[in-house]
Structures are given as C-alpha cells and as structure tokens.
Length: 381
Ligand SMILES: [Zn+2]
Image 1 (cartoon, rainbow, N blue to C red):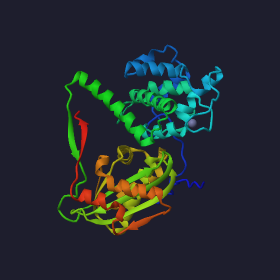
Image 2 (spheres, helix red, strand yellow):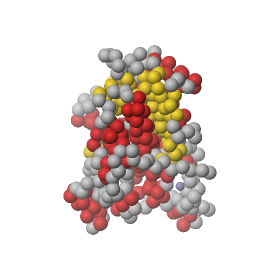
Image 3 (tube, rainbow, N blue to C red):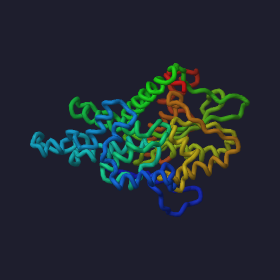
Image 4 (cartoon, rainbow, N blue to C red):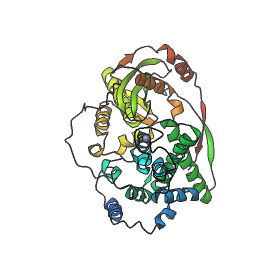
C-alpha cells in the first residue's frame, strides 16, 4: 500500500523551528498550566475527590473512577486473568489492547482527540503517564468552545469506551465522523440540561441551507471543505466559487495525502484562497464548516501550532484579498464543497480546477441553487 503523507510546505515566509509550551492552548507559557503540571508531577491526585468534582453525569464520574483505577476490562486484563485467549486490540488487531492503547495510542482515539481537543495535542502531554494524563485533563478547567474541558474529557473517554464495547459486543463500528458527532451531541445535551437547570430552556429549530452572496453584485462566495476518509487517513480538499445567482464559477478538488480532518480543512481553505488570489477575486465571502479552523485562523499563534504552516499561508493570502469575510457555517450549507473534498480524497490528483460542475455533483449544485433548506435544532444561549 502506498501512503503519501500530507506535509504542507509553506508558501509565505518560513518560520524557524521553535520550542512550544505543551500545556496551553496557544503554545505560550502560562503559570496556570504550570501549576497543573506541577500538581500533576506531585501526584496530588491521590485524594480522588477530583473525580467526583468533574461536572458530568454520575455514571460518567464513575466511569472516570474506573478509568483512573485501571478497572476497565480490556483484553489485556482479561488475558492476564486467563479469561480471554487473546490480548490483541479488536479494532486494529495490531497490538495489545491496554487502556493506554484504547484511550490514547490507537489511531481511532488519536483521531477523536485531534478533532475534539480545542488545543493541539502535543507529544509531551500525550506521552505522560496514563494516570497523570487522566488527572491533568479531568482537572483542566479551560472553557473552550466545547464548554468546560473536564466535562468534555469525561464524555470523550466515556464514549471511546462505549464505541469499544459496541465493537466488541455488538460488532458495530463507528466512523470517526459519526463518533465525533455522537460525542458532541452527548456533551451538548449535558451542557444544555445543566444550562437549563438555572435558566429556562430555549431551543429552536432553524432552517439551514446555502445562500448566494447578497447584492451588491460582484461579491463571490467560496465554500471550502476538507475530508479525511478515516481520521487520520487519505484526505482530500475541495472548494467552489459561486456568484450571487448561485452560478458555478470555478471549483477545485485535490488529494492531499494522509492527514487529519482538521489539516484537510486548512488545506482546502489555503487552496481556495490561493485560487481566489490567482483569479483576482477581490470581493470574497468564504464559508467553512469547521469551527476549530475559524478559531485557529482568528486566534492561534501559528509559531506554536502543529498546523502553523497552513495557518500562516491562509493568513498571508487573506491579506491579499481587499474585501474578505470568513464565516463559519453549519455543514448542511456546505454540501457541495464537501462533495468536492470527498472527490479529492478518492482521487490521485494533486490539484484539479474545474470550470464546469462535474456531473456527479449537479444534484448538489441544483439543490443549493433552488435554496433547499435542512432543519437543525439549536440551543439559544
Ligand atoms: Zn487498536
């Protein structure tokens, strides 16, 4: 099997190699994170009271307790007890199924952390002792876009164990995208219920669909998307430029090699912006459906981020477009770009620009053109 790793080379000015503080979201030293680190090293987690302080469901608190105490019945444990004939991981069949493998080292869990962690997973953090890692995350009170991180962490680990059990006992395998959505819905559900405990619940259904750029004329809308078949996995990028009538102006797709969904999102945006600069599109609205990508563009310190090369390149091209907006939209409004990204992921092409809509995407184009809307339930905060 041939694997091409997606390694982005910088278009804009190159940054020298640099050290990164691994315990903060932006790679910069913070005394608060150092405090957690020092607590971590000092092993002040032996009172266990922190487990019950995690703001989560009681059964998830209990799960974290089992996790921290190594009480989960992995094949490694069952094998050592003489109950199972094999200790091998039922998902990858490549290594012993230890707790560390299930929750941190397997490609499946790494992909989920990559998608769900609001700051870059770094090797230091990831290579700490497993118990220290649980403690550090479960007591990390960073209010990210997912809400309280310790809450999210509890639901992510609980879900990873749930997916593992679904696979072992039900033969059911979840794709990374489905797994991510499942986890996000669990976290959201919990946060909503908690939120409504103090305030009246206001949830509403809105209709989501692609809309053309509003007049004055001359504004062009670019939708981009990245797609990894597994995460990480063979990934593609795609994007489409349309005018105020929804007419197809130009699109692109490409295979970008083996990488993560987040990297593919940034890759797609970079390609789209580059194409816009090349074509002289000076009045542009860009829509992406990855909230994390938008946050990275707005606030990441690219010197300290593993995807800094792509972030820098995007910013460099953004500065060359006189009138530019970059908006986050829901996935329902980004179906055409998603179709192109998937096409890219399945192709061998390094870059293809299309002046006409490919026939297999005509339905999606038509659907956007006539203003098809999809319902989505949102919580009003
Ligand atoms: Zn495995």
